[in-house]
Image 1 (cartoon, rainbow over the protein chains, first blue to last red):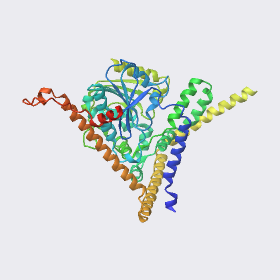
Image 2: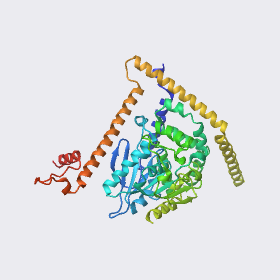
Image 3: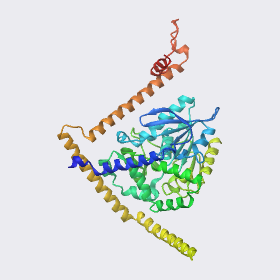
Image 4: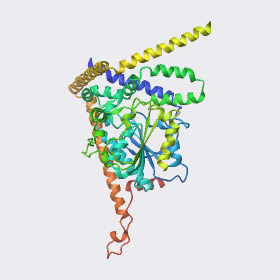
Length: 341
Length: 133
């Protein structure tokens, strides 16, 4: 009986994943990212992308660390809103594509991503361009990882931009509440990954009126061509979920959300290296979103031990809106100004 | 008359949205609700772990590899791949370091033998030669 049924959760996972992928397939006319690019390096699931820049584009290369929770192309979703397109005009621009991690990487720790993988990418960029330092921008959890990396390898980063990156999880809003009581041990005993569809559902869950408001907005604006272009591109991105590797998810919930080790300077990598905020030297821009419920402004503040030079700008938008909304252009301009000066 | 009805509907919809929004917002932030949700998720996950274990045992009884075992093999392969990447990086660093050494240091003082260039990445060169052919 059990053998024939398999487990309920596995079935549900497979069916939902399949439906979401099919939806994504239907929206396949919307590409995953609009700026031309090439894969310059591969390591397992992870790829390093280099975006096309005008000939003669020089300067310190910029490495973008996207979130592990969703796909990277939210920063390159249409020509009109693309951060990456703007960056690539000014600097050699690279990005780590985390791919679609599955159960085969479920045993890898979070430090595999925030230290080992980022270091490999930086090493490749340095080898290819002959530089000894890169500029780095991290978005959401990607920002948290970029920050941890800048603590571990301070000599490799010149400028660091933290775009709505949660660092201090002591008051991380509604997600902290859920993380505190999340049955993490049961999760760890039963799953090798946090399924992408379940993550997507949890984001919808904490905004219960979100689907209604989205439908209302669609009804009001669907005749606008520019709105429809962005709307469809966003839908395509939403229906392209990514699973979070099991052990890394366990560490994200326990070490960061529950114990807040990063802000306290007590986080260590799987190899026992301390992630020490006091060791950081990179010139830093903290770019946060005033209406962010995923990474509220208070969570984006740097730890007290951090002595690196820091500027802070708050944009009046939400967590996703800061990349695609009407204020996204201001955020992008602030980032470029920071990098160029 | 029609406009008035439409306005009323709009007003009603706005009120409903606000009411529902406030209510649901309170609900999803409520500690008791969150705790109840967590217990429900914990029960589902415990059930899943139980069924997975039972299934693994059934597969083992039939002398077949279970899903858990296949995943373990995949994870071992990932570990091997990781080690390979680390080793190739160390090899590349070694080659780079050798190439950076000044010729005077690398060449033996009394040996008038022409230096062979050290291949940067033997595998890649071989591949490139194959492609030329």
